[in-house]
Length: 208
Ligand code: 5GP
Ligand code: 5GP
Ligand code: 5GP
Image (cartoon, rainbow, N blue to C red):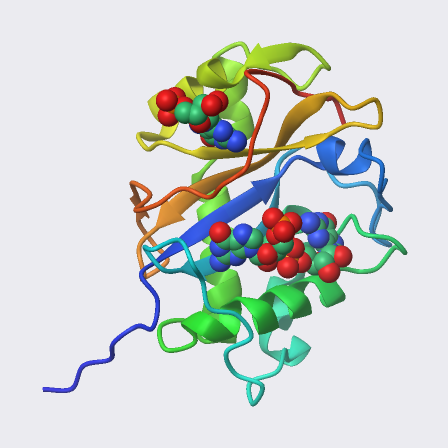
């Protein structure tokens, strides 16, 4: 019997709200392909250990290779847009995510599967719709973090983690949403451990 053991316990699937990346002190640049749609974008699919630590940059011999994901490029541009400056096509962001995180799950997902699986998760999980259905809109209003988490829990069946950042006036706002995924990359699970970090109890959901 041959069996492959994974060298991690679960994934964090992390999505970023572009409005919160852009209105912070660092500011943002739209990708060369144009302003992204007003939706959560993928930040990454991150292998993690259940003690809260995580592996990174696991295989320098498996560098990012654009040619392996050419069939995914329109999906990546739409769902995994880069907002860092200076403007880029996204290739640098995807390269960084593959090399830092993706190489640590290469025993289960090769490069194509890693990006395909991450896009599939994004398509399955419409967080913006779930929030809108609960009356939580990206309109600059303030919402309680409790209500935001409850809306997502009710919509997807699992407890998310919210990461906040601050806008240029110092207000705490909804920046990233974490959900946990099993080691196959296909099924949501309850998080074995949550990240750290503080939000105010009332946080802004800025427009984009
Ligand atoms: P920050 O310091 O901005 O929270 O995180 C910087 C980067 O470290 C993230 O974008 C991600 O690449 C990585 N990172 C931060 N927290 C975690 C975590 O809990 N798990 C994993 N796998 N990566 C993380
Ligand atoms: P992590 O925080 O995942 O280790 O690293 C994110 C890296 O990707 C940083 O070097 C950051 O500059 C770059 N990057 C490019 N585009 C984006 C983006 O849209 N959001 C975030 N958070 N990082 C981006
Ligand atoms: P409890 O788990 O008792 O609701 O919250 C314990 C503490 O963690 C509270 O200070 C609460 O604001 C914070 N907290 C709960 N959920 C989250 C979350 O998703 N993100 C962040 N940043 N803090 C949270």
